[in-house]
Amino acid sequence: MGALRDAVAASGVRPEDCEINLVGFSPPVVPFELTAHPLVSQLDYDRVSGRFTAVLSVTGDGIEPINTRISGQVDELIELPVATARLPAGTVLRAEDVHMARVRAALANREMARQLTDAIGLQLRHQVSAGQPLALADLSHPEVVRRGSDVLMLLDSPGIVLTAQGKAMDGGAMGERIRVMNPVSRAVIEADVIGADRVRVSPGALPLMASVGAVPSGGQVVIQ
Image 1 (cartoon, helix red, strand yellow):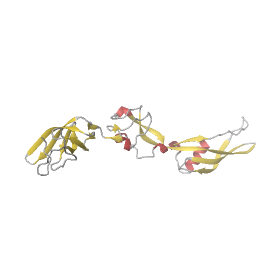
Image 2 (tube, one colour):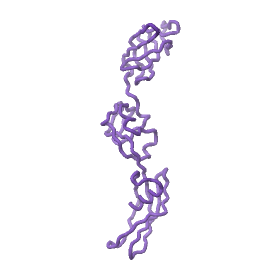
Image 3 (cartoon, rainbow, N blue to C red):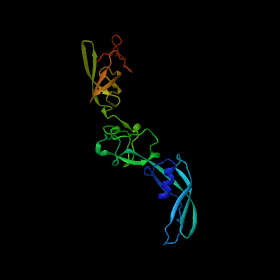
């Protein structure tokens, strides 16, 4: 394996950054009392698939060189944040939930969290297994408004601030825009999440859906 790692290193891959597995390898037999010197040559390595073939030559004093064709797989490794244990969907990641580990580069086939700070404080969209790296698409900012919850709606206009209770039609994190229903007018409008169960309605926002009899005044949403 040392000779094989040297050959892989000559191809541009650092030996400490990969795992090497031989397929169907039968070690050549040499006299016990002799010191054998292995050398790997004619390495044909495909970095995309990780597969390789090569010739293993074993030499030593008093023996004819033994040449053996070998093949196997090289898995390049990179260091990424991974889950410390199995974590269910909805988990907000804490420092103890993730740690840096060396994983196969082939597992990072999407945009991945590269540092612990890329993951800690974010929420999992899907369950992850222990040791699994974290795709950025599977992470989101924690929801501070849950779908179906009661929210406080605020509308800031020059010289006046209106508030009312609403019903969240979507869940949302800080800064996200969600749909909220006014339970009085039954109008559904878009609002920006500004805190825990708090949303802000932009002046001049028009209802996405209004019930019969719910009439905007002057083109603006009236929060009753």
